[in-house]
Image (cartoon, rainbow, N blue to C red):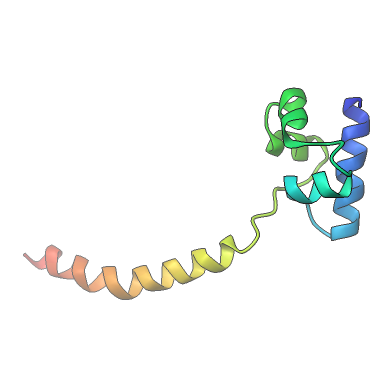
Length: 87
């Protein structure tokens, strides 16, 4: 499979999903013909392959976890930091 064919496969999968596919989704969509190892050999990383397609990596639920972590951090760390700042 050429780089152009790989890019076309990634873009096609992205169109169906409405976002950049994960490596697992891409492998399933291509019936195993485009595994992560092949992408890494050709592009260096999966992120670079997505960049070659004009796509941005999909982070799944991470933004939700990030928002929750920031809320928890604000609630618990700020009072502690104020105590140390006053000492």
